[in-house]
Image (tube, rainbow, N blue to C red; front, side):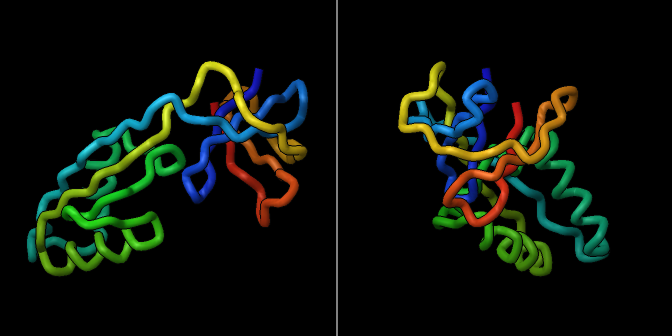
Length: 143
């Protein structure tokens, strides 16, 4: 009954299709992954290096809707900062390490329900969007 989803501030939510409401969930645990990115070969184009970065993320199973960056080369970071940091490291032909974190959902929702409305959901593909009262934009959800 429902799906779990994250919003930009990394809070974890559960959406009950039956109740048509969201509930903030307390994560059972947090999982971290450390991902090493190779230095860009100076002869490599920016587009080709972007493909290398995408391949590294894919092999590490990093989905940006679930995993959030928390460290870049040992220093705290966030999703908005990460793109620029990766771009600068690539331009400087330096290898770098990013630590990603995700919240693990509890078996059952645990907090106060928030009213909202499913604006679109594809049950076959398992994702969609929800308008949650009090949020400035629709929230992406997935199974």
